[in-house]
Image (cartoon, one colour):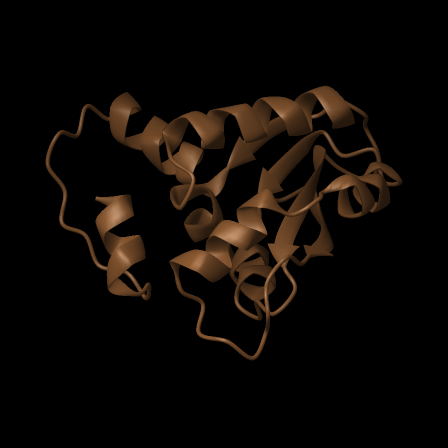
Length: 142
């Protein structure tokens, strides 16, 4: 890891209309970890964030936001949109994380991938599920 003013630098890819992830990450941030955000698009901000919209975000070009994040030399990159990868399926989610890692040289995790990893690590087989998503995305998540 690159050491600079702390333990690690996290680069976070966030949908351009999301106003929750940055303050949430600030609340969850461990001491010594700096947070650096780049916004990504690929959907229409004036439309309901349905499965088609989130599918577009998942398929959006990440070259520019990744390039901007690489300026801070992050140790970890988080793809911070669960619904964008849910609309493409688990194989897409894993491939996206691998592609971001290969392109950036940073350890990479997606929001959906982190959730699956946590559930497996904790040995959880049954969960309750609630989300802010439209029904079609909820079905994909389940």
